[in-house]
Length: 420
Image (cartoon, rainbow, N blue to C red; front, side):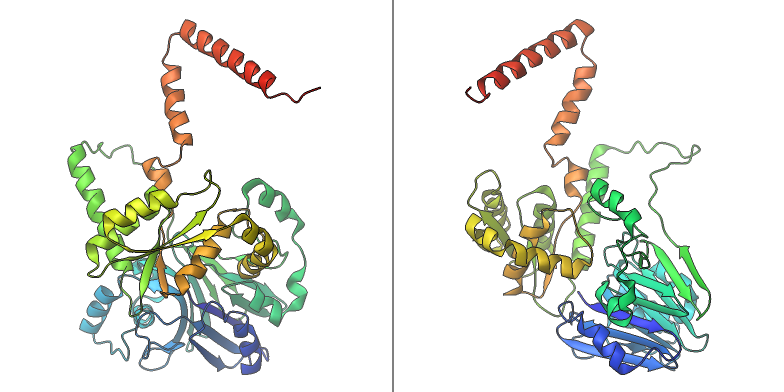
């Protein structure tokens, strides 16, 4: 994880201001800091060095220096892209994945992002056209905030760099309060700040000092054209293809010049990631789990069984209720300070603590999100399955079941009522 920020505005961009903006992102990139300043335009990065630790310093430029970029994230297919670009005559000065994006922009312009596989928030400055380009990955795994007002443009991986450059941006966006309480977060492009926006996932923003334009280069769609025949391949072939795709996805994400590991809760998502990591990595995977004293919250037993089956180097840290209570406000404050906005996700608390545990041993972590939805890991899905079955029952059976459930609920309520 790195942190990027920048500014585009006459007389605004100086190394002192950029330094103060970047300082707020030091926790995202403790290894290095880099600046580019030219004619009212400035880019800065706080880097967490993962690929080409020594040679991949940013900002990174093209051969002629015409294009300069900073990036938070990782481009997974950079090696294949690099081979293709070198075949076209491009000269690389590093082994960095970010340098691939710079040369790809020289070839394709703003459409270069269509070729990238990865998680990224990129800021790229074309010095010849005096054009600033921001790009965010397809699913928005890496955050990117921006503000445009009074002739200046600010951006950052978090809100804090923008507030350093323009404290007046602290004005609250009251219209975002209702969506926050409804969804637990503020959907893009809005934020809880009236004049600060989030660049939506799968989008490119271009700014030339006057005009700002946002273009969507990718969107998720499950629609199937009516003329497309239904794929009736055998279930085994589909399963084999899914297996191959998951293995490839995990293998690409294990490319690192520093130690890496995985969070392991024992659920479908993290267990799948760890299983495929164990398949593609030569050494035992380092896995990390948070345990709880309360049995209803503790998943460490499931995680330990997965770790044993996959032969991982496993660490567990138990969080006690008293410890969580004593550290609650400091933990919440740290999380909110990093996210820049309130976040209605209670899992952020154990994630924060397991991240602290993992940081003692590794620099990069793989984590799974979405497998519970895809593979039916939530118990609520069992209820949905029963509901579909219930809908096929004859009407008399459904009526009888409702009556029995109602009687059972009434009895439970009476048994649990407080004494008079």
